[in-house]
Amino acid sequence: MARSTDLKATASAEPTAASTFAAAAPLLLLILVDAIGFAMLTPLLASALADGSNAGISTGLSATQRHLVYGIATGLYPIMTFFGAPILGQLSDRLGRKAILLVCATGIAASYVVISAAFAWGSIALLMAGRMIGGLTAASQAVSLAAVVDVCRPERKDFWLSMGLLCSSLGFVLGPALSGFLSDTAILPWFNLLTPLYATAVVAAVNVLMLALLFHDRRQLLASSPVSLISGFKSFGAAFAKPGPLRDVSWVFLLQELAWGAYFYFIPVFLLDRYGVSGKDASYFMSVMGVGFCVSFAVAMPLLTKYFSTRAITSGSLIATSILIAVSAFAPSMLVQWALILPISVAVAVSYGALIILFTDTATEDTKGEVMGITAAINSLSFGSVSFLGGWLEGLSAGAPIYVALALMTMSWLVFSFQKRPK
Image (cartoon, rainbow, N blue to C red; front, side, top):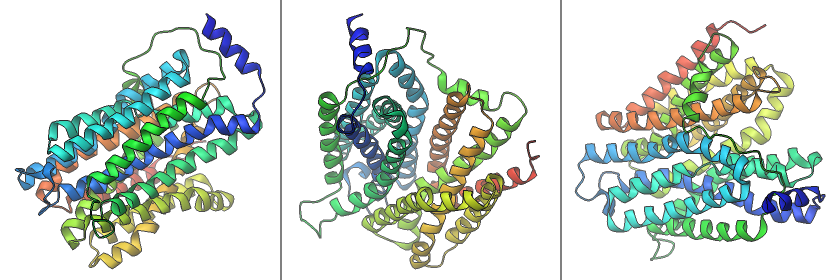
């Protein structure tokens, strides 16, 4: 009762610009660190498990086993997010944002400590444990954005939400770039595959302290109510429960996310195998992909929505992404891949943004939260399942996941094209 009274008293005080910045800074850093770590590990793990790698984590593994380990390790994170994020989101309404954010931040730090130990000791079990810990506590972006809304003035809400999404996009630029830079022994002789992991764990630990010291809840807690342990499945099932616009856009979104998951997770492996690039080059390649995300949300989407309908943007961006992935799948040189990655990432981010708008068009004022929960469930389950399948496909051919990505993205466009336009 005392805690609830304190929260009410705090909520009544009008936040100043200085207090909002002090409270929002650790929240934005948490979003950034989470995105950096997620984007960093993909090229780092691909390099460690590539043919000819001398990393301890690949010691004694056959080529087929390395492909399976990569697929399972990358897929565990989103699958655990599918289970954990909805539960942590509900708990943040009941126990307070700060408690759950501290769990998220501590989970990020702990996951990279465990993954660092996995790389150092060559332990596949620790690698999987680290990915599970990180995925189960990966509600940081959703809860952080909710907390930002709690601490800012209502008229500044859009600005701070934009800052949160910008931090997420920047994480996809900085994560792979830091992975390539901090693992490059040509820069400093003591840099290696472990250095980026150590750096992420340290920054995540600092973030825990910042949250503990600077962030305070400014909202009343909800009355206690049961927490559903199968929220992810409920959200996913609601998307396809009955005919209508929601089910139509859910099918398109599911195929699009499966396609992009296959491309995102396996393009670094494809580049390492097809063109013999270094792990550093694959990391920088993924960093340029993150730049494309930023360009899409900051420039492309605002311009396109001014002149075209959402359905036209969706259709155009889906077919553009399919064509660009097709060229990437059969590109004759790495130079062509470098030329393609920025337009591919812009096109797929535009399709993502347009589909999210179509999702919100299906919602009423009372169901917006539920509908956004559906998008999160589809995203997590798609990325996790396609990663598991891609690890097996990669054992057949390094290009197989990319060909699957092409087929799924084309199917997404075809399904969208043949759907009836909602009234």
